[in-house]
Length: 267
Image (cartoon, rainbow, N blue to C red):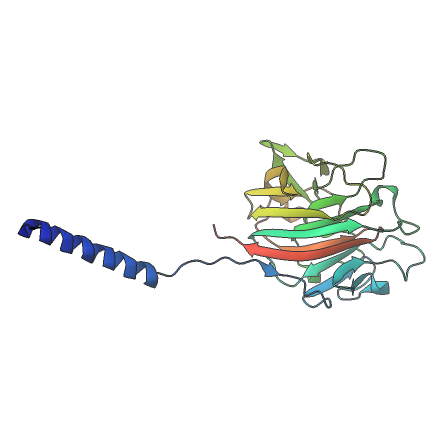
């Protein structure tokens, strides 16, 4: 078979171009995103409690414990709840990320717990710095992904939104009510439920339950009540919440957490 000189030149150029692209793909840096474990399954390393009525770092009555690789909210050492609302804070603040874990409610609510706190807990995101919380502060200024378990009878969605000291935009409307219900199913008993949160700074936040999106809202910002800090936050009203700490809640019902992982996102 005979080749013209022109065809030979074309083939050579194509070969050089392919070789250059192949070598370039080997040398260009690639962005690798990995989920990181926030809980080691052994102890509370990286996590610090702040319980109402007690100083930051005081794990009153061993409210937060690790047993059999599970992070638990326990009331074994309590006689009565006595409004000891607690939060377990992770050491690092985040802004753009995905967070996921599994949770379940177990046993019975401790005596003295509020009726609404039955099978009730939460993941608090965009939290204020816990080191600055007041001793008797009940909740951090934050956005709460509320976790609820069914009572065996009624429909009770989980993955709802609560807004302690904050407001959001929901369906393009400013919402000042404390709770926005999600579209999730009800999960009765002691079954494990998978929750995931996608957080995009102060733009959009999405809640997922067992892989299904159940709620989304935008523009989280400071405002409103439900946090007993007096007028401390008044000067910061309407300030956007662009990031903050993550915490897990103790509200008088035993609850367990596992597989706590986070994936940082880039804008």
